[in-house]
Length: 142
Image (cartoon, rainbow, N blue to C red):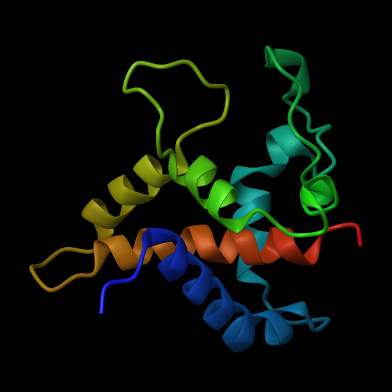
């Protein structure tokens, strides 16, 4: 049975949330989604994800308030759109966009650190993106 990319992303996100969301949200526990966000997103989107990070003055466009993504999408977090934006899908090779293409950065990391023929580099990239989306889901204004 073939599944669409959107179905695979949604299923992976659900599995990730079930396996990790509750544990990571507990006080005192390591939160890989927050760590991913703080490492790669907070400089532009702010530590509170509201779009007012310290790099804002260097950007042509103001960063998005990531806490209102679901609210602006009828109460549903736009997981597929988020995944594609973070991954860098549908961006011309020499196109202009302020936001880094994290999928490319994660792939470069995977090539550097996951050496050998049996490494799941795409799984590594997918898990990094889904971990970040899980965190963004948890910071949504409801």
